[in-house]
Length: 153
Image 1: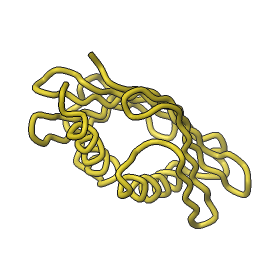
Image 2 (image 1 turned 135 degrees about the horizontal axis):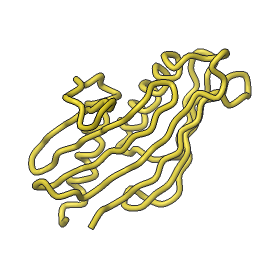
Image 3 (image 1 turned 60 degrees about the vertical axis):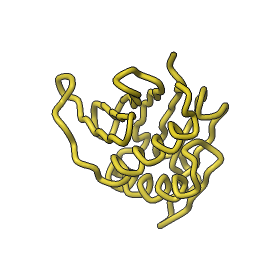
Image 4 (image 1 turned 180 degrees about the vertical axis):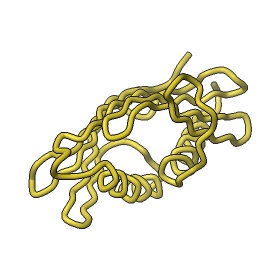
């Protein structure tokens, strides 16, 4: 892996085009999985996840069919009677799209809309990281996601 700048730009484009951009799902790679893909140049992105309001998944980027970067995540609704997965999803899409527009996809981000506050914090950089995102409603955490990942060699 020599093109770190190109890889970072590709990850941003792939994230923006798939979940955030309502990209089309592709055939399931495992029973019960949802899969989103994106390709450009030598890179291919696969986001494979399971579940709905509580979910677990993995994003992998391949360069010439070899895995070069990945991220695992687990998210869940903490207050299902208070907020729906659709409400959280709508806020996530807006918040993450704004973060990606700044040329990054890791922590140090806050976005407030419609009485909800999205917060993302992380340690490390895109080559090796861990982090947490959450949504607050009236000062109470109603959704949380934990993630980690980095370069693969």
